[in-house]
Every structure is written in structure tokens, then in C-alpha cells.
View (cartoon, rainbow over the protein chains, first blue to last red):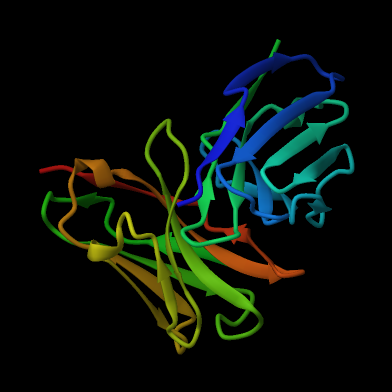
Length: 107
Length: 122
């Protein structure tokens, strides 16, 4: 199985901050990398697919980059609705696997 | 707008079989380049993909669970289902169904059900 490792596990930030979350795959996965946002008690929501493609309806302050084994999710100016947990997920090989999550909290 | 809704017992006894159904509305389960997946999340923990099915019945399973998992589809009812046998307390989790969409050759979960909590306890 491909292991996905996110860093940091949690971070504290203020509204307006630029936030970057990193995801590393245990082997090259080309651009087969997706990012999700999950709020407490809710299902995850797709933000980015194919490492950098913005899902319809997701604000442009959210962006993704990377290829191979190293990927980043960036929120350019953190808004109150962005405080949540973020997961990366690889779709290069089944079984699909997720990172352990990064919780973004209010400073 | 596609919607998915999980249904099934919220409490299952150890060693018994967990059975859930996902009903898809707002679109046909047979149309488009989609698989239909089950994913679970123990309380306070991360996400684990269980497996997926195509409308033809073709399946992929997570080998860590494969021996006890069966995913099936009923296109006439626009539903797909999960059966997990011989459950233990470790199978207690919120179970989600999701649509696995292929776009530019990349698979991603673009629609999710709200999730249903299944507790394994005697």
C-alpha cells in the first residue's frame, strides 16, 4: 500500500494568514493526489484533485501543487470557514489511502 | 445534484455481519465514468477506504479488509451496499458512501453521503 504522510498534524493560524500543508507519498504517485476538507460531524469535501485542479465551487484562495512524492495545499488568506481538518488522498493505486489529517485551528 | 444516503442498523453485535445500503438520487448509478465507494472513519481518527463497485459489478477492495467485505450493486434501485462479516469493536466507525469520479484520468470522491455511525457492541 502507498503510505501518505501529512505535516504538520495540526497548526494554529489567524484569519488572513497564508497556510500551507504538506503531504508526502511513500512512492511516486505522479499527480494522482486529492485534497479534502472535513468539518466536525460532516462528510469530507473535495477541494483539489489531480494535485492542482480546483473542484467546482471551491474558492480560488485554495490551491494545490506538487508531483511525484511531495505535494502542498495552500490557503492564501485563511477565512473563518476554513478552520477544519484537511486530508490528502492518493488515487494512483488501489487501495486508495489517505493521510492522517491536518487540523487547522484558530490562534 | 447527486445525493447519497446511507442506511442500516446503528448497532451490530460482535461476530455478526454489518450491512449498509447507500441510495443514490439525482442521477443514475449506471451512468458516467463512476465507481461507488465505501469509506469509514473511527471516532477521532482518519479515513479508511473499504472498497468500490462499478455498475457492472466490478469491484476493488482494500486487502486489509478484503476477506470479510462484500460490496454489491442494485441498479434497478439505484443502490449499492456493504456487508462486513465477523465484526469486532475495531469496526466501530462512521461509514460513508461516496461517488468515485474519474476526471482527467484522476479518481476522486466528489460526492459523499452524510455518514452513518455503526457501533459494534454486545
